Length: 193
Image 1 (tube, rainbow, N blue to C red):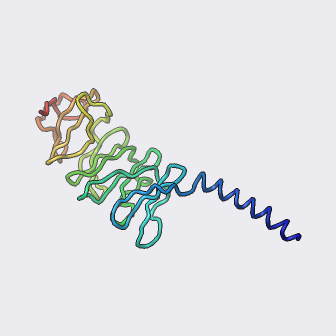
Image 2 (tube, helix red, strand yellow):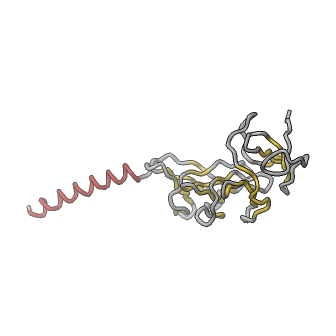
Image 3 (cartoon, helix red, strand yellow):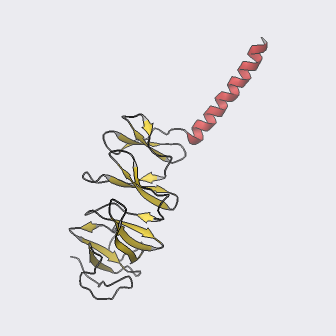
């Protein structure tokens, strides 16, 4: 009888503690597929973890979010508070660590390059995290004509100045028309029709 008076309250406390933990930190069961073997598991605290179905293990600690990728791209942006990095969607492994780099923003890879923001400047890296186009462009999130994503298409990327006026750069970072009318570099205003 004494054992019952001890076990029942302890069991009740353990059950309540588990329910509170599960409510705050437990799985949310809203998963997202990154590839055939890699999924994102969501949690009640609005965080995600990357899960490898083959090994049955998580490959990351909790992260804020992971971007979508195109079918032919293997790297996705992931976020920690005020930091960005890249995950290989086929292996679930972090390939460009958000903690090791000071990238405040990052965009998807296109034409082999990805825009990243460091010290409020935009530059472009390759999949090995090598800087291909130096951090020389001013960051702005406003553009007068449309939303864009600092991505290359057929070798060119639309780059705005601080006022939101657009110009084009090539994969070496050189302005298409090479007139220094933008504050961020040798770009010019262009109309894309």
